[in-house]
Image (cartoon, rainbow, N blue to C red; front, side, top):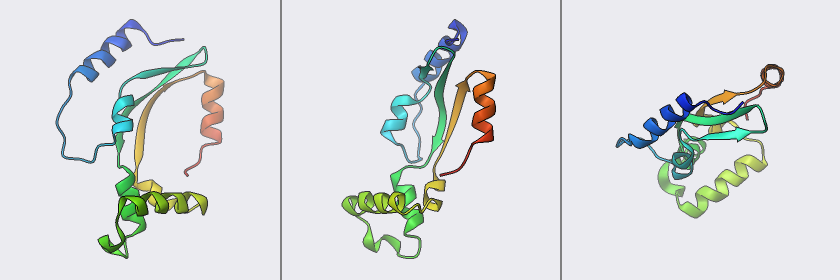
Length: 117
């Protein structure tokens, strides 16, 4: 079931009202904000809000080192290291709030098998 005309109007209104912010902004997430992406035949998913970016993850990982080891190249390497070695706690500094429309049987499995990276 795709989004309704009413939901699309709400999405268009939200996307047209850009507001300045003082928080960290991730351009990749900004591009997906409020857009509904169809999922198979019976649903959609859209990003409602998000918090954090790569810098938040790196800051959490380096909490005992300070900014002395900070550089863009080091940030990329640090994130790869964290993922490769399943150090998931720094990734918890970021959140995504989603609006998901899906069949009931899928929702039950999703809740049953949910986990935090």
